[in-house]
Each structure stands twice: as C-alpha cells, then as structure tokens.
Length: 228
Image: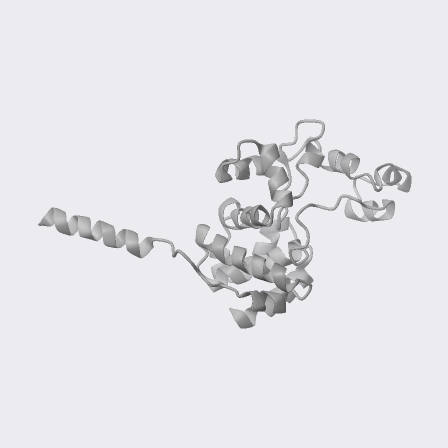
C-alpha cells in the first residue's frame, strides 16, 4: 500500500509539473496590432511560432513573454531581419565602431564590403578563430547570436551536426531564428526571473550590453501591455 501511494504521488507530481502541450500567449491579430509592418500571413506564422516555442522553453507567463517579445521585435525590426546587416557606408562605420574606424580613409576600406567588415570587427574574439569566422558567425536570428562561441553553444543545445549549419539555419529559417532567440533569453541569459520582476532595463542590458534601442523596446513593451 505504501508503494502504491508513493507511485501515485510520483505520477501526480509529474502531471502537475509537466509543460502544457499548447499555449496562447499572443494571437496573430494582436501581433499585427503591435508590429504594424507585418503582413497578415507573417503575423499568423509568427504568432504560431511564438506560442509553439514558448511551450518548449517553459514560457507560460505573459509577464515573461511580454518582456521577451518586446526585445525580439526591436532586435529584429518586427521580424524582418534574421541576419546582421554589415553593409555600411564609411561615415556610419565611424559612428558604429568609433574606436576601430578613427579616420574616413580607413572606414572607406571597409565600406559596403560586408565580409571584409565582419571579419575585421569580429575576428579574433567571441570564439572566432578562423579567418572567415567573423562573417560566418555574424549576427543571426531574431535576437542576434554573434560569434562562434555562442553559436556553438546553441548548436549543441539544439542538436545541430555542425556549428556552420546551425548559423546558416538561424539566419534563414523563421523557426530557427525565433528558437535561437528563446534559447538566448531563457537558457543562455536565464532572464525569466528578471522578466517576472519586470526588470526591463536589466533585461535590455543583458541582451546587448547597454541600452541600445531602448526607446523602441519600450514602445513595443507598451504596445504589448494591453494584451498581457
């Protein structure tokens, strides 16, 4: 009898802690209201992915989803960008990387040359140790994984055979782009507790190391709030 109740308790505990099979954190109509540049077809696809992947990563609270989605929408320009744009004019390079491009002449050497630029600014850091790593592991996904090191961690987590294949998938597949963003937020940075506490500024700093794009992040945060 004791063994029976022990087993029953074990089963009940698993049922109580099991992840839901489906969840509705945002509808396509709500997403399109928040991200006005989205087409109806895109909002349907992305709302489905938001909800589907939320289950995978255990995001069942709208408080957590609210913080996550606001940052993802800003980082990806409303899900339009899955790959970092490295095509800059010289004057922009001097603003984005002022310590690296100290003269216009130097900046001109890398202007409108994405591969050369990425290998220069990202080479030799973030785990990049091969000549073409800077470009091959440039920002990808809806939250911008960058560098061989972080791509390797995600590739291992997601079960990719090669890190190179992972990086290509993250920059080309909507599902992989969003899955990598959930992984970055929930696993790599472990920001769910901060989201529950509504530490929005702390979350922004954890994502990009500062408060870049804060005004737009707050804009999406406020637009999402009525639906949360």
